[in-house]
Image (cartoon, rainbow, N blue to C red; front, side, top):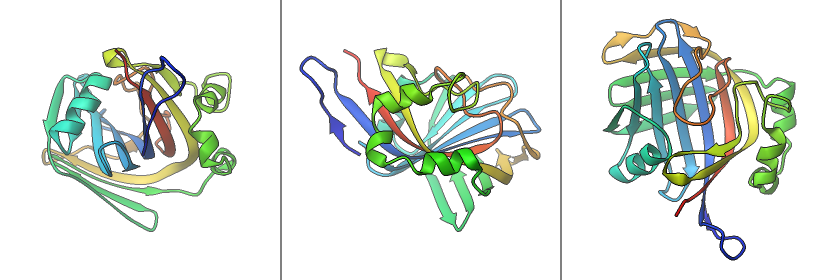
Length: 211
């Protein structure tokens, strides 16, 4: 990840390259995993959880990442816990404090094949995020690829790949969260939600810092 500066007077921009997975469960809890292979903070992963009662929880691996993500999005509770992600073939295993999550990535559909062909340098451009911004363009209705966040920041999601989640299991604080379900209602961490259908998405995320 790089920290970039544009034209004179533009605020600093931070870039994050990685994956976002969004899944729902039959218990009503929705889970969003961010797995960042390159970032201002080095490689790291974080988990955003919205419970059936509406509580929004962030699980982050350090105080530094917790502060940044917590300032950018909205949470009721923030916990600093070890967040470990392992990927073997198409199976993802996540251990994040009270959460144990396991899911598989399915075969790409035509949209995923199309997005995968986008060069990384193009996906990193805010203009690409504007082009794919829903609902009238490429991505699902509840997905927004640009908007304003907390701390007077702006954010763009450059989508580079999408794969359906084929199956999952999840346990939170020792309780089974049930079978996979749509992400419904949409999560309320930022200006948009993840797709309603559980999805694994590769993104280049650009965050422009406020004053």
